[in-house]
Amino acid sequence: MIKSGEELFVDYGNTWFESRPMLGPCALYHDLDLATKLFAKYDALRSELNSTLSHELLADIWDTFVNNTSFNDSRVLGAFHHDDQEELNMLQQKSMSEIRRQQSIRTTEWLEQHGTCADHIQAGPSTIKQAGRGAFATRFLPEGTIVTQMPLVHISDRKRLDMYNMALNDDGDRVPDPEEGKMGTQLLVNYCMGHADSSLLLCPYGPMTGFVNHGSGQKANVKLQWGSPERGNHMPELLEGSLEQLEKDATAKLAMDLVATRDIEEGDEVFLDYGDEWEEAWNKHVEKWKPVSKAESYISAGELDGDATKRLQTVFEQLEKPIAQNIDLTCNSAFRNKLWKRAYLKDDLDSFLGKEEGEMFACDILRYQRIDGTYFYTVALYDEDNDDRQLKIEEVPREAIRFYDRPYTTDMFLENAFRHDIRITDDIFPLVWRNLKEDEHQER
Image (cartoon, helix red, strand yellow):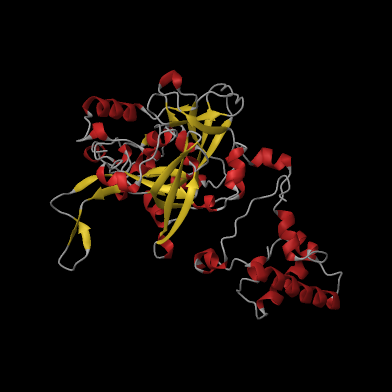
């Protein structure tokens, strides 16, 4: 059970910390128990000396004690907050593990002051034609509300997202082909933020931030602002430092907020103005764009899955008439459990899949049969992690089978697809980060 206000933790495993010495001696699980035993020895020593000693003298004794134990500079000592006298006092009644669990709970008042809601927005089909999904307000958000936080990963040189055709050099290594040159830019740039005068890209990874679409002028209802150190992992002093300093720090220490510029009603789509340069680039792209060869025959996995009543082809039929070059089939291994039939008859497959969550494996349809007007299939599943072991499942419903697009075959990966970063306004983008000359930023 997770209590209200309790911090959420995922078990990274000990090796995550052991392989990152730069984090210092972070305590592992068993170290907390050893730390409790170590403090018990110190507490006994303190009692022997004099329980009326001043806090300053006791602190000196503690420092001397830990510096002369076999745990010196170990993860065990990393479990202590050495300057926290209150914690040391708590250790007289509780174990270190109990204290850490207690410290992981915040009051509602603390959360209101230091936190932001992660569920102000949710994803849904955008109101903009062909924009895919958008972000929508889950409740009324008055003007000035922090709609969502945006922790940022910084890329000091945006050229790292450039892609090149590769060739083998004289040593047999794969290197960019000098004749073909640059072939495009990674899709990630569309979700990152930057400035025309800077090589820097700031890529957010906050909840739902990637679904906030562009809305120019009065359509925009949120704006960007730098985050607060009290509400997230943001270090404002980095805004005064150089890109060289950012380059040396590989950790994420910057954050922005999306703030409501006017009242946003529940269900309204959230729009951010990506900037005049972005909009100008988009308009030019639309004006010059032309479909690629054989575009008229393209069909997506989503379109194929949309018609669940149509009979699926067997693998033998596909030899004569393939579905599409960009499409493959997957089947849900949960349907090996015959209990799906009981849930199916009750029109409650969702409950079955909630309890019997299976893996999606590449599969072939071997044959089909029609029962009471509904198609059922015999499929062969291929487990790639187990020497392509084949598993046959008979009489599975259409709900067990899904089409999927092969990697990098959807239209967003075409060579003529749009690529442009979201632009940060001049008034909040630091001057010290503007490192590009006129001729350099015109290319961007």
